[in-house]
Amino acid sequence: MPNTLLSARGLQKEFRRHPYRFVLEVDRLNLDAGSIQVLMGPNGSGKSTLALLLAGVIVPDAGEVKINGRWSPWTTAGRRFLSYLHEGSWLYGNLSGEANIKIFSVIAAAAYGESPKRLQEKALKYAGFLGLSREDLRKPVHIYSAGMRRKIELSLTLAVDVPIYILDMPTVDLDPESRWRFFNLIQERKQSGAGFLVSTHIPEEAQFGDLLLFIKKGKIVASVYPEELKRYIHNVVVLRFNPFHQEQLRKALQDIKGAWGDKEVRLYNADFSNVIHMAKVAGVEVFEGYETVPHLGDLYTFLTGEMIANIEEAK
Figure 1 (spheres, helix red, strand yellow):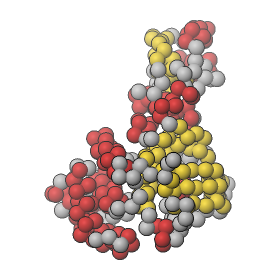
Figure 2: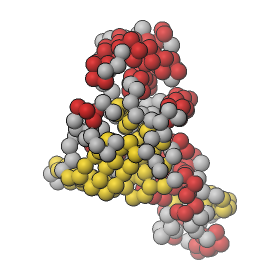
Figure 3: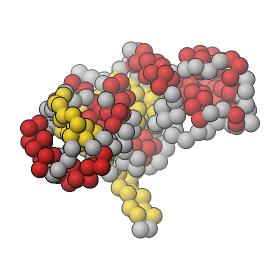
Figure 4: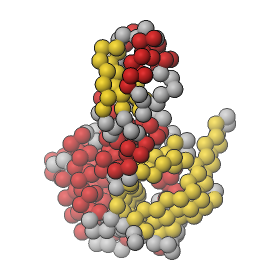
């Protein structure tokens, strides 16, 4: 029986700014000990709003969030069980990376009842693991790249020893090597029983999740274990075509879900012979066509409806 660290039931939050209206509705969510849940969806789907609610930063219009089935994240007692990483940057630009680590370690120590020195040492260790040198840490943060700032923020967030980590877009400014290091780090941390909710819109990051949550227009449309991929997508038909014929091909294949590029499309649950015939009837020049197996990037597109702009991201 899984040990549920955090649960949400009947969550609702509405935002209005005339003439726009956005409603987040999440019926049920459980974050278990020793797991990484990856929350995936396009921009504006509700990822950050859900993270804010689960972390106790904003209050829902309805529903509840419980930590260990007992505490609310909107209480002092509940907050001590979780560490939250905000999507935006929050470091002091006029101070060095090292000075920021020292200041925020003191603040976190007071909030979580930990040793400031221990938190500082852990944050510095993580910053080094993520690729920041001692020389980097002595520089003022205002000259840092966005990725360097993010590494400091990640290091501080992970230095706190709590069972629950809610990380909103943690890898958004990181290079591929640093992203791999980050996920390697939290894979190690989950072995001690910690639970992670990580939001992203990068399809390739699905591979690091024990459970994938797909959100679209404020609703979780699917909760999928990676091994269940073929329950949704049985096959993929790939066509490489004359880019001047893209509009004709889109019109001919409009009823088939897929990820479109300028010269290539990946079509889901499609019959290969039928697709080739439809392209031929539409007068589209197809340079190459073949059938292949789906992967997690395809699942992201299939469930969220977001077409991946660069077809290479889907591979």
